[in-house]
Length: 249
Image (cartoon, rainbow, N blue to C red; front, side, top):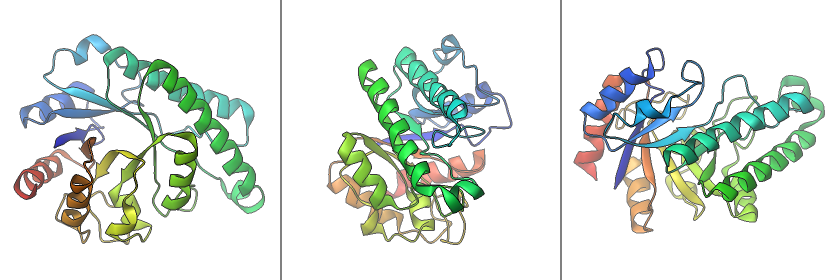
């Protein structure tokens, strides 16, 4: 089983601080949150740690589904920059959010938002495939502006593109999916955290109500070969969650 932790925990510190902590626990992988304050990652620095990497492309102040052409093109370029970084450091996966629908866009132009999101995702997929980088699209929680909260619709799109999914277990639970309803053959990468279904809380594993054992055991029985990235709020939660993974799996 491949286990990693996201630098989202510790995002308020410099990247080296987060990497040192993750490495100190003996965790194999770190997922680099490739946006402010770590927008400009120096690959040479990463080599000084005994870690392997995945990358979370920017999700703050970007939107690959926006109706504004120039903004969408810039957002796609930022995804491609993360894919370029992944290619340079031999990262094992890149995670991309599918985009957002603002209030007016959701009210009047939601079909256009999804059409443009799908076109953007296809473009990102083609770019990634040409470089031999695994890029995945993440399912979203139930927040108003987020699209592809419907994990089945996301899976259908990804199957049509021969593209992988990042299953975010906490997001799927927040969207009301049961453990068995979260499992798809398209899953190539996983974000694991806990909640009670009422909020995307990113709690330590075992501190919410998600049947994590059922989900992980099902994935393992289906010979899932990807990485489980612990995506929680702080360093203590990484430590607790890593202990949970080692104890239960």
